[in-house]
Length: 400
Image 1 (cartoon, helix red, strand yellow):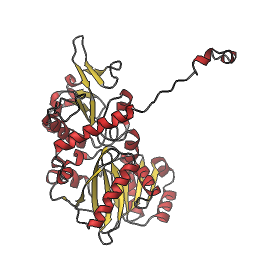
Image 2: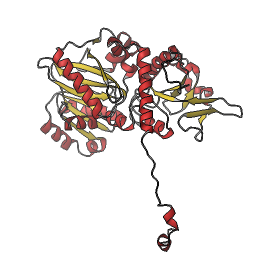
Image 3: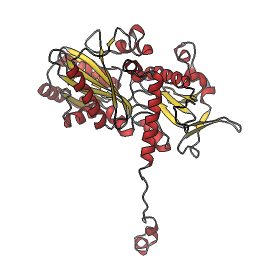
Image 4: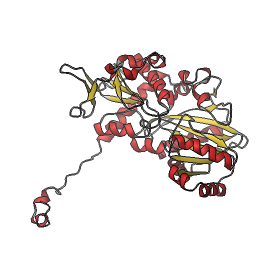
């Protein structure tokens, strides 16, 4: 174990995959994390969750070639899935045991989620880690859940005066019941062109731009294919897409600002992950400009707003805040928050003076700090409610 890693951490579990539309991006992030941790001489257990929800274990699951080879079917290899979670032993850790009398035991002391989107970045698996009392990297349950909901995030930002674009949100059942009333509400509050987004997804999946009501209906149907909640917001003209990544707990550090270049009206999935190497290299050098081409004054204002947003949502570990900037006016709007950036945005941290080994060490340090701080809070309460069940009053009410 690297001497800069807490000695209480003997084995780090890297969790990735799951039934999210961002499944494949999660695999790429996980392989980066696994390779980086092994480079720090950490003991690592890859924990791959299939799209069907099966948990699989195996050292070679930390090899990207295993997932990129179309001839290999991991889900069909039962040898990866012969472990079960020992509920009795999993207190302050997660203990997995292989089936059989002499089965191997895997004990995970710290969880490193590399999951994106539904079932991993939205507070679900964070809740599981909380139940077992195991330290984990990244944001907590509440922060993850709110940040993954674009509508809730924008509501919170708007309420404290953080600039964000005008928006409307609605649910699938509302759209199916009365499209006309929703269209009327949108036309009264917003001005075309509009951006339509699934409320809970990332990686630009299901997002579309609508220039009129007809296109709006088409884009909403696409968004509802991936989510049951949709956000419609005004488009920022003369757009510059700017990202600020942050790391830390109570006093986060902001990265340099990244300006993302895109080929069409939005920074698409293809722009992010498929062009010129995409996510395998973090971002194509031709797809981003670091630092963003903004004045020192605007740069500072955006970084300060990113930190304010981080603290508002009680984010921790690492997160990313995206901004929309009007090039002509330099007016900016906080757009979305990503509680677990794909590939940890290591390319941006590298450009900000922090290489991957230091980034991973810091994330583990912040996870332990958050864990130790939470241990100082008393979550139990001594009550006489149960003993009073034997009292005559309760017996008379037939509660004995």
